[in-house]
Length: 482
Image 1 (tube, rainbow, N blue to C red):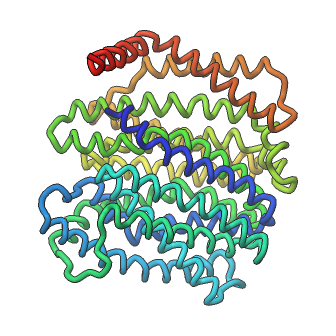
Image 2: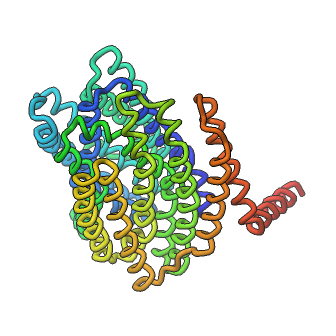
Image 3: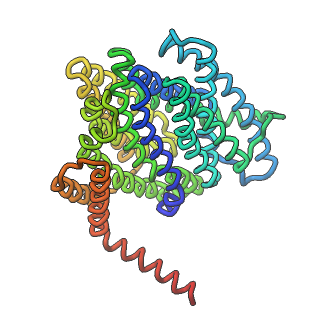
């Protein structure tokens, strides 16, 4: 079930991060480092605004979607949701004022505030509707919500940066407009109430009861994910962070790309199984997800580390080049460690409503990452900062896995991990033997070679499973033909 659902989610999980990666490369040719730093900090701060405004209701919708329980309950949910969304727009405006004042008070104008507020509001609503689409298994709506913003935002951003002004404000406006269009297209497909005719207090109480503690948890998670940006920005300044933002952002986006390939489908399936009283099967789904997650992220991180120098020389604008080569591979590794516990063991805590465990993990990560990132930055510069963050995430992952295994009976897929690491080693050995790419074509061929070597090694490692799946497919086709 998980693999089938993962394949159905694949277009969204491929196209959205692909355009995010492409855009990060392209924007290095338009934005100076200070503007790049402001753009990255604004997008990161939007995630915090979403947490306050909508995340508590989004997670309630994903976990307890009532759409199959009758028309009256559906209507009550939609009208209550509309009221919450209206409130989120007001919160976005306040958050935009605070954000602009903190990041760059010299740009504190109503035009900038409204642009940032528009971006905050449309992105938050887009994220909420994406969670609703997942809960309803409306994969077309989910795909549109995920891909239209990055794709249209990229096109509109190119136009505004070229013919208006090469600033973070122009880029934020472009993505806000794209997200607004995505919401207009996809919202009718999942069902919405435009104006809240009534608000169901029972739904709000239930959403606060479940989503409120998770809001605190997600807030801690946001700090754990984004502390690096603010620590470096505060200590070194916006321009210095802007130089680091490209390598840091690309590394994390590549790791996130691998993680989201398999993570989107896992939680709804596990939640459904748990709701049906099938706890053992829910845990097994998450173990399967862990195997798939490691199977995607391990070769991704190793591959990035091995091609980071030629890829940076060929793709990134000169002002950002040296810094990106320095930290790209380490950034991907730091992100992969964090995403592993976020999308596997931490998910168990949420499903089992053991939010205190998740809070412990986040606090460990925040404290360790902030202390080690700051110390690493002051003592060893950018490399030290990234290593500090990676060590903080490693400490959190160790605590998270310990709690999941000892307290909640989670069994990690050890054999699968061994097979993945062996296949990744085969890929790494193959890449080490080929010449360094000197052109974009050579870089693409190197990437394809690595993917091919890994695919062959995985097929060998899982030969028995592959033959079983193939045999079942052939039997089904034979039965259908008969």
